[in-house]
Image (cartoon, rainbow, N blue to C red; front, top):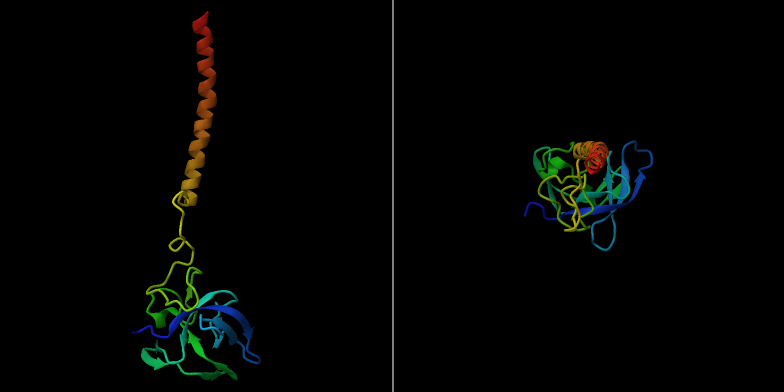
Length: 170
């Protein structure tokens, strides 16, 4: 059970730690009824993002060795867990030191995915059956060009056919 105690959390508060340059004190909802206080120096954490939290007692790999997460005093603030980066979770991609983020299809307390999720919404969005898949910009431009050509041809062709019709009648 490698991921025991490692859960998705929503950042409900994000305040700088006084007199500490890079540290932020977060209040994170991990689905436990009350927000955990977690101190981080991850630059990509802002209010409202979904992060992956290693709660107290969980084990993470830090610089190649397995460590148990304990309550710690970080910059004068008690931190009840730590944010995971991609390397700790074994994800490929995502910078070390940046908090691992997950899309909002994950609820507080959920287990994080086994690999780094796409954060552009493409993989996780649930589409209704009647919804057309989103077109790429390239396909949109192609469709616009074809529509213009068709319109041009129709206006040209329409004119000629009408003239021919007149000639046949006389």
